[in-house]
Length: 314
Image (cartoon, rainbow, N blue to C red; front, top):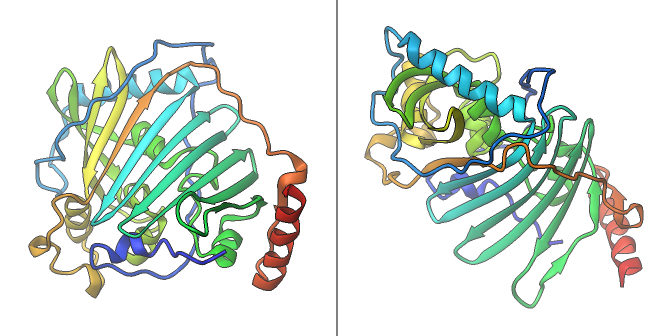
């Protein structure tokens, strides 16, 4: 399969990165998860307008409101999160169905660039993960077999970055929704929250976190606009400009590729997530065994295994 590196997501806005893996981060949803909750749908909102620098004094009421709204999402246990990342001419839309208690998810991510479109399916059940790549357009349109692999091995063999959150069974867009801290209540339906730099960067792309030198222990936070409805979190939004500004405010030096971002055309560089269908039953099962290839880091061996599997499928 022809390689297409997810570095293009960053190159589209003048950034480059090298490979690596994301660190683990988990939420702790309550054990008394109810069987269902009222479905909700998020509405888009403007990117955060306040400064990316850390505010001096958070509003205790805003913290309580967001914490209660996050608890409602966690108690619902299941749902759907749709995340859209815009980086220059490249758009990545991921729709993930999740089950928090079992640390399971299935997702479909569509990567659209000016000259190419790819779809990556992922299934994660506990510690096991499977991925499938589809090239839907053109003369070389094809769909791979499912690959059972560690995300690092997947990237080494295909050049594609695994969906963020696949290493822990929790979609990256949901991680932000569940772990942001309330800062200021804008109105009944919106609040400004703060989220740690690493979690927000990985919601854009794991490559971005690596480029910026961030890991889960990095200090500092960035602003996000949290959307609320009927006492639950229904979505959030942030911008690349806010993230990069917050990295600088945390005392970290931006790499050369990211400097001068204030003057760059980054108005549309953003990530937007919507959480919906809370409490709706979700079925997450492994792919059929005869459609699965155990992917290894050796590219030639992996290619042979994939060809044999695809031949079996006809």
